[in-house]
Length: 255
Image (tube, rainbow, N blue to C red; front, side, top):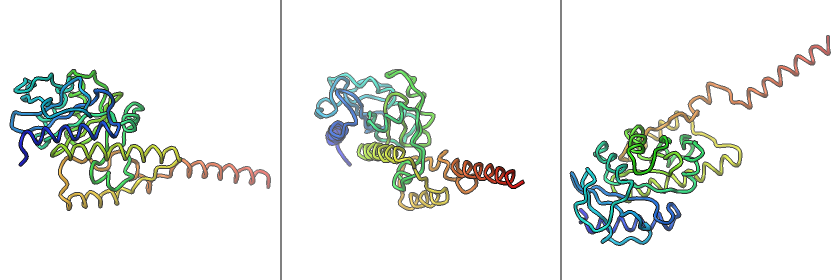
């Protein structure tokens, strides 16, 4: 089991990674780790996540009261503490602004298509929580509608949030989400994002269970793949309509 100081070092390492990968700019983002029944370590406000030291990390309780540390806690602490109160299984929360995933959030497009096996197993459908004013209870209220059933959520016009069993578990989910967003964007620009059929998604969820992957996963949500065999797509419908008109015109010409 890691010591409190080691977990502070891990927070700093995760901060460096999200900064170096461009998931945050300037002093953006916040990272927390739950270390006890009523103890949470949090990043300070007004500090670049790429240049933190363990001495900057603050310890608070679930009410947000400072237990130790000389710095001021992140203004987004309310969001993190709400997650810990309502998801006892969560030991770390990360909020960042990964550019491509945040682009989807700004565009109002959820990452809810089942297209990559690894993403289906790790995260499943990634929804968008309604916009809320930062540092208020609006964001905690918005995200908990979704985080009761998933481990990653986009924040409308704001960024993204991931939760995990530890700091690196939460961080890797942020990496996975941004990687998925980049691939999804390229596929859409190329004109086609093929979805994995529902039956195959169900098999992947069985694989997830066998692997013992922890956390919440909503699986297939509104991706449309489960309807592909039952409903024609728009291109098929258009082709059929053109065919009907052509046959009608030819029939009239022959008469």
